[in-house]
Length: 454
Image (cartoon, rainbow, N blue to C red; front, side, top):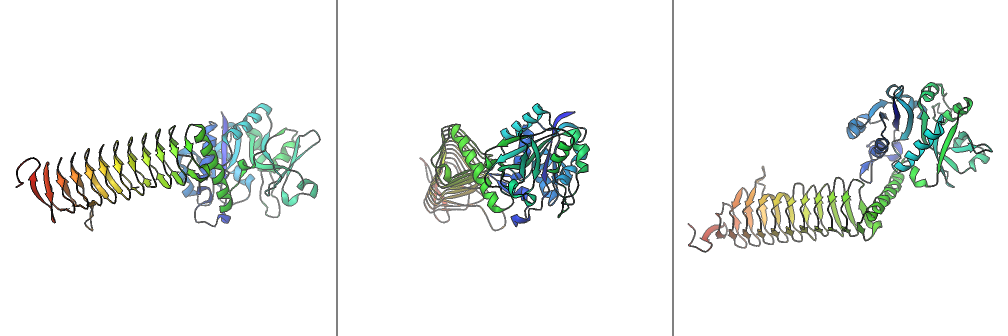
């Protein structure tokens, strides 16, 4: 039998989000919020991890995949009923069941680990997470006896003025003794007026059985933000973004203005990199050491090497090798690849193209569907005309070539190594290596260091 199984309750309708997207799939700091709960369970070594789904179940399955098993809550009859749907996948397989929510991404893994440790130490039927707060947030109140032992959870709607004055709140996160849970959970009765089955009633059952109920009380309300509206979503985003930025700064990354820097939790950054304000680093992005990023930059799903500079530019699904630089106002589109030491000037754009080490690309240029050799000079305003209205075609430029300003390279076309293209040329045919070509249309004029070209 495994020590720990986790049930993540994620079957809610999320109607207050006013969205066609399932609530638990809304991203928070770069990850769908449900994946924060899945990651917490994985960090604890839980097996199995069961996701209780309902509305939009297939969408959730597509995102979470094989990281969890699935139970379906066809009718929304409360948290107790939701956890009961996980019983076939958990009963007899674990000693402890941890119940989490799929819409509580700000809960720290360290706090969940502390909750589990307390449960294992106390050997209680239930160990619950509580928070002390003057703002009740609509949570149930935790009632203790004179000795400080948990006696009940009273929902706000049913609380007397004396109970409403209590400041210890139930967060809805529980560790259960598994054998006791599966015996007693089916005996929870529906609570009017909605006639739903609530996990809070398990506390009364434990007291009735003469069993202990422990509580881990935390002070940080930010950890237990449940997301029901877009306002809550923004609050959780701010909390997690602040944590990400603090972690990065402690790891040796400089953020000149953390409040104006937006970095997803999935981003990796090397030490001594400097991030300027109004920068967004998103998705599966990795940035090396000693890079300078921003200001006013967006980088998404890209690899940025050591010592790179990205100034006021957009980089998406692209690669920049060591010491390459772009901007200001550059754009690397998907499959753009800048080799070591490549320079790309302001207002340049590269798409599905490789620029080999040492190449310099002037401002106001567009290079698409191209393979550029080493140490090529691409003059300002050069365009690879890659699209004929129906298909994309490739431009190849050999090492050491020189492309004059304002040139138009009409693909498919190959410019040979060491060739020189005159300013304003329209190149419609291949140019041999070490050949000068210019004109409209461009024609080979002479070999470099030799006779006129044929």
